[in-house]
Structures are given as C-alpha cells and as structure tokens.
Length: 143
Image 1 (cartoon, rainbow, N blue to C red):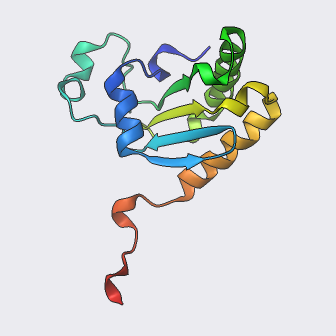
Image 2: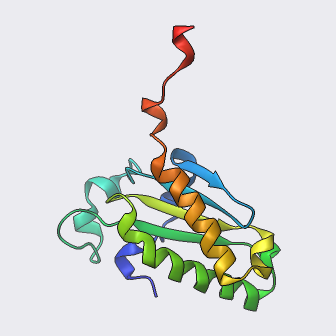
C-alpha cells in the first residue's frame, strides 16, 4: 500500500501533473511528472493547515494512477493498479521532493506481466528524470 502522504487524491493535483509536467509514453503506460508539484491554488499556500496528513520537513513525492475501463474488467484494472502502486512505492525515493507523478495505464497493460510493467515504468522514469525541465532547454534562437 502507498502511504497516505504519498497519494494524489485531488482532481487539481492530477490535472497539474498532467498539464504542467513532462510526459513519457511507453507501450503499456504513460507517465506524467511535475517536478515542482505546486498547483498554484490556495491549498499550496495553506497546505500545512488544510491537510492533517502532511509530515514535517520537505514535501514528499506523491503518486496517482489512472486505469480506465479500456484496460479490462474491474478485476484486471485492480490488478494493474496494485502492481503499479507497488512499483511506484519502491521508486518514490528517486523522485525529487514535492514532485507529482501520474501513471496512466494503456489498454495493453491489462495483459502485461509485472516484469513488463516494471520495465516500462523504469524506462519512462529514466527518461523523465534525466531530461532537463522545458524552461532550461536550449532554443533554436541562435540560428
């Protein structure tokens, strides 16, 4: 089980990770990572007041999962979610503090093995963590 302080629950947090973060697509899943993790809403300014689950110290990385009905029936979707939660829990320490990650399972994930999901997740995280944020990427202005 993923600890409470490491879970994404609010729609706004999911939207922030998907819209403001970087994306890495793989055959079985798409991973969205927002390194700064701020949503810009009032909860960011008063997060220590509004949430009783916030621990002292730097904010921890938080993860959310999207597994649609296209992946399969409820039993298969829940199996995929359990596998992804377990895989992400083992990798939370390598994510920047305060980052938001959303893992979206694609339809082939329903038939994939644990090892296949692990390989795709690792490849996506490697790509996202080695890439520089878009704001510091070089532009083609020097042509």
